[in-house]
Image (tube, rainbow, N blue to C red; front, side, top):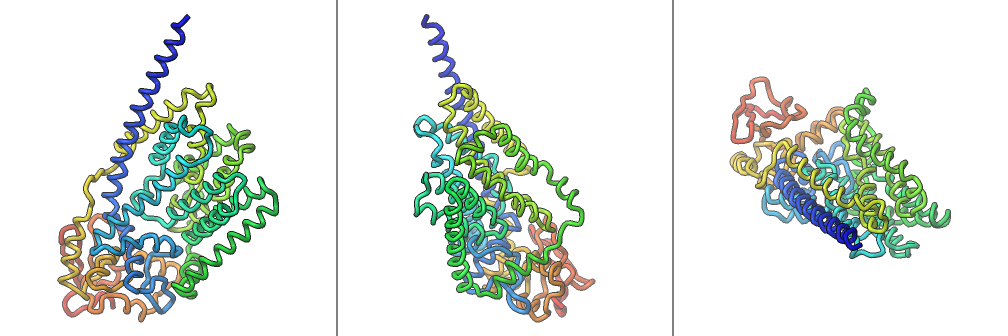
Length: 486
């Protein structure tokens, strides 16, 4: 009589042990993988040119240029992601600033994920769902698009605002006055971070209309508009109307489309299958839950509303899969909703162990598939760059590393990506503006070895330019009496 009960208890104990071991392995691999990305962060060229506008702003340089005036740079997004990097501008050198930015970038992903996974109101007994929430968190961390950990994107702040805004709406049922306003502010902040985040407030409005009626939706439109106007007015006061309008509206309007959109979509087909196909299949399978449970309705709407602008941005030249917000907005809530409440349903008893094993397997695959796994901050190249910049002050330009001369020359020079975007959308750069924000006696151009470039700086060099390898850098020299900027 007692044998079946004892057998069930033994099976349950073994299942819990296996689940605990799988979660421990997932946590270990996730920690190693995240640390490696933090170490890799300073070596990524794009992080230098994205942190540079924040450091330049802290030094008093204008960061939103207009035709004829200002430093042409790669930043074509709203000001909030730059202000988020402000603590990194207190660093005394470029490599330290990048390491601080790496910590900020990681926190921008992990903190919202933790708040959603451990704070979503999907279980009436939080203690019983603690392991489920931990499993959901580790799954989200390891399934999050890897490039977000290695590169700083304005999209990361937009996604963080979207996740937190949706969490506020779900934690207060029916949504209370403070939660509604905070959600509206976060939705407006998402759009102020990246223009393509407009689907986030749209999903909130549609969901409130679905669950609370037209009047609730109309009021939220007004709340989002009011929050947007306040953020917009503050941005104009800080940065000026002309620069913001030109960089955020006129310049992106000139971005060209990919000439063969179907080939572009085929090239990113694996990502599209994960970001769009998997959620669509699961929501179709569980369509009753996603059509009746308010929390899942908001998740489904957020997923759907993020698709159009994300795909349009992807089909622009220079567009990447970081513009596809659907999957990151969808995954944390769905994983938590499933794993935090499975203890209620005996049919799904196998899923917590399977999810923990999947997290452990994903962590191991992440480590094994990593092309490199640095465990110390990759800042060595900046030592040579700093030495070169100090020896050749006012005479050397780092087209993809403006941080170097921001610290040595205290000057903000053009970056090559910004020049390339300007040339492809606006044509020729006004000569006076081009010369005003390059080293005044420029004779040298320094490019990192192993990184491709747009060829903008190289085209400034005369045919007889010489080059020298200095550590991780190739130093191009036009000659003592020649200025490569001419």
